Image 1 (cartoon, rainbow, N blue to C red):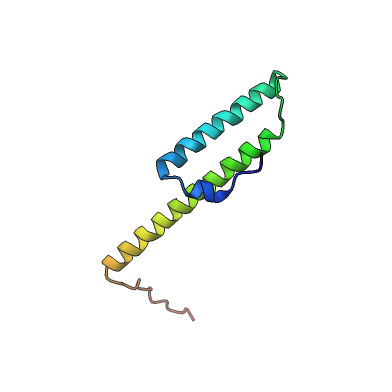
Image 2: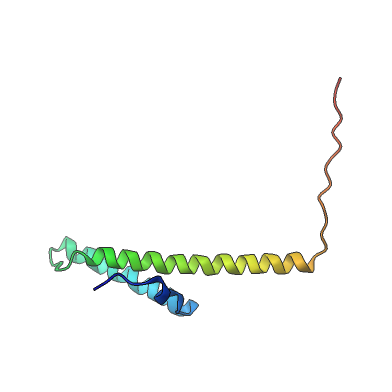
Length: 93
């Protein structure tokens, strides 16, 4: 089984992505449990599941940052630009 592609994670909606992350974390827990009880048949599954979790969390973070940037641009466009005043600094002699 090849490693999953990040494009697959990008196709998911926000709710599906959150559900998939939760399911993958549960799967990783189950793999660790199998390893502890010596029932693990496919140790390479750890790599695949961790890789999939990382991809989905990356996509989730990208979406959150994009939403924050859009919100910041929206508020910046709505409010007038006011430059912060700098206090006058007097030199002591």
